[in-house]
Length: 295
Image (cartoon, rainbow, N blue to C red; front, side):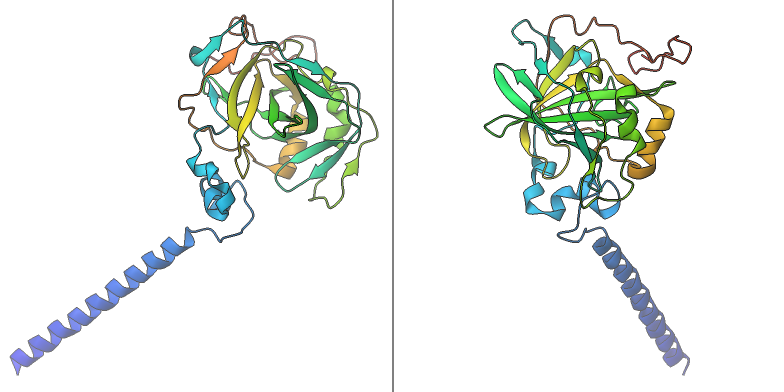
């Protein structure tokens, strides 16, 4: 009778063991399933639709994971090649009217009128729109700026060229963008919100236009490559209030840094030696907060 009882106890313990194993495996299975984003879901910057999952959301996004010329990157000056062969970019902007769009990923300013262009190596690119990222997507010497503006241009062949401008907090407002930051659409827009006053992008860009240039991609799905990136070294400034106005709506929309691989970064002579200006304060002094100054 004692032997039978021992056998029954062992069987009971074995059954309990199997039940525990099934529960554990079941939890692991469901946990694994929960890490797979739903196909066709809209991309975002967090959770199951964050940048590391973009390639899983749509087959068209495969370059987000498999590309070798992806953006953004970290600009390390030791990797920059200064060359006289690099023709200086020509910027032909004029005061223009824009309308604002909240597409759920950023705030985009779309030109109402045409005529804003840049010239790169003899090829003309027309301005399509400009938008913002918080914090900056590109980095300089391993450090990010408070924000980054992207001015997106396209040539007649459909190729893109994007000017990236770092933005850092100052005690003063960015005057050319006063109306823009005061009327940022809080919700996603079905129709663009027109702006009352024209913006002269010449007054927005830094006076010192030394820039880095490299081949990259869109920083959002489908992460298409073949994009010419022009990264301004000198940041522009905005007030803390303006930054908060944007952050309260968008929160965070920066893709992580991508590997540079074998790509070369070019700059015109003098770029490395250019001194980065620091943000002005209300009393006209300067505060030292740029990444280069923190080195």
